[in-house]
Structures are given as C-alpha cells and as structure tokens.
Length: 74
Image 1 (cartoon, rainbow, N blue to C red):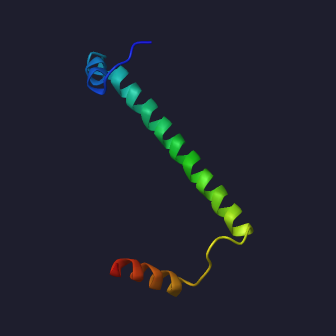
Image 2 (cartoon, rainbow, N blue to C red; image 1 turned 45 degrees about the vertical axis):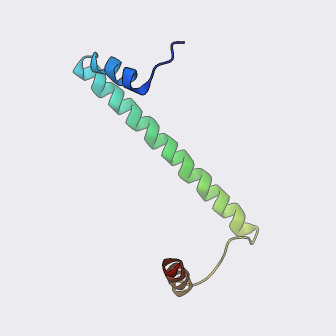
C-alpha cells in the first residue's frame, strides 16, 4: 500500500469531483461520531465499574465546586 503524506492526501482529494468530496466528508463525519460514541460508552462503563467497586469519589455539588475552586487557586 502506498504511504501518503497528509498534504498529498489533501491534494488527491482535491482532484475528486465535488459530490465525491461531499460523500467523503459525510463518511468521515459518521466515522468520527461513531468513534466518539464508543469512547463515551467506554468511559461510562469504566465509571460504572469504579462506582460499584467503591473507588469513585462521592460528594455533594458544593463539594465539587469547592474542589474545582481549589484547582483554580493552584
């Protein structure tokens, strides 16, 4: 398989007709959305596992705001 640089790939895409470029954009957007969904699902699963294992910090909204304020002071 031929290895392309990012710039050469963009140049190659520029040679495509507009409708093919639009199709490519749609495909890339769909793939990025799907990847993001998978990432969110993975984070949710990890958070649930931490919660049920008792390793997820707990507190009130006030506790969270206080902790975030401490981070701003650093």
